[in-house]
Length: 381
Ligand SMILES: *Cc1c(COP(=O)(O)O)cnc(C)c1O
Image 1 (tube, rainbow, N blue to C red):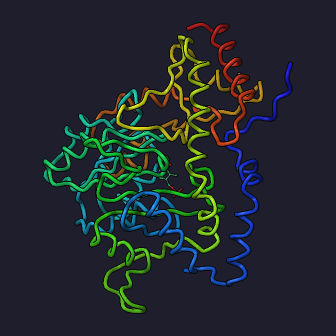
Image 2 (image 1 turned 45 degrees about the vertical axis):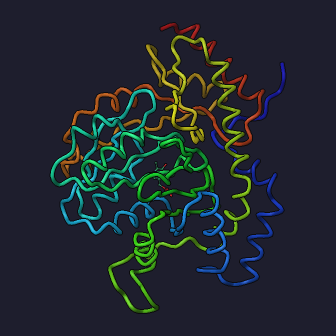
Image 3 (image 1 turned 30 degrees about the vertical axis):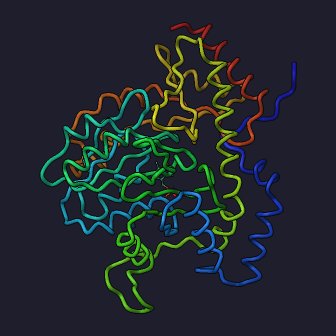
């Protein structure tokens, strides 16, 4: 039997070793400059990222959560205004809505794409609805065409959570868009394990709307227009120079990172194809998939027991996410859980995310798939 390198969910070290020279030079340059905050490299990265996204304005922030917060603050919403966002996702979107005194309205997701379900959005609209925050979960897009139609009909803002989908594209009216650039504002995260990760926390908002861009730039910097002149209440949310230098070194590799993730996913797809208890990821035909996660559904067999069995074979896996937000105490208490979300509840029982990163080898994926196949054969369904 072949020896296989230990398998990790994510391998940041292996990726660093390939790109060490550029990254080290970038970090050394920041230390040399001593411009640790608001250094030149921050605006250089913003410009390069704007070019990558084909978008007019990029404003970097301290993390992805505050990117979403900054975007929502720029909309001038009133206390109690409603913002529709999915229940089956990471907590950030609902959290910042609530923190701003707005009302998160949690709705269900589509069973195939795991992204917010347009029908559930329609059912949740009230006269107080002001915005929709779809999440492009695991790296593919929600049905933006329908979401933009709904937004237009009801005059709503669309703020895209592209924290997991950077590097994927969406085709809208025959034109291809980088993730997060068809709505009013895109938000992303550069958390180390994200598709484009820095070596700490980082994030960005981006838009083609000059008015929203100007507001967000001011909001992320204490609400300042000119130095020490405050035009609105803001926050302190900055990408520091060290992180910008890492991102500037890694950005030219993003297309390759995504290609590696897609190649790993294609191999998983092929090797898991005919296992009746496993449902492979399904893709919205208007979207490409960046495979931030490769997430399967485990049908008719106990997902958690399968997870334990994989761990016994040295295969890590994760459950993103075990409890949908509408079932969480914090969100029930504030009345965010008004709508039934049966698909979110079902998915939380079935999903399993397999190791996915830029350094996975063919041998590793073959071993993972063979182990899953063997488990499923033994445990039926
Ligand atoms: C990671 C993530 C966030 C938050 O980003 P941070 O940089 O960790 O604050 C928000 N939404 C989704 C879907 C994410 O995956």
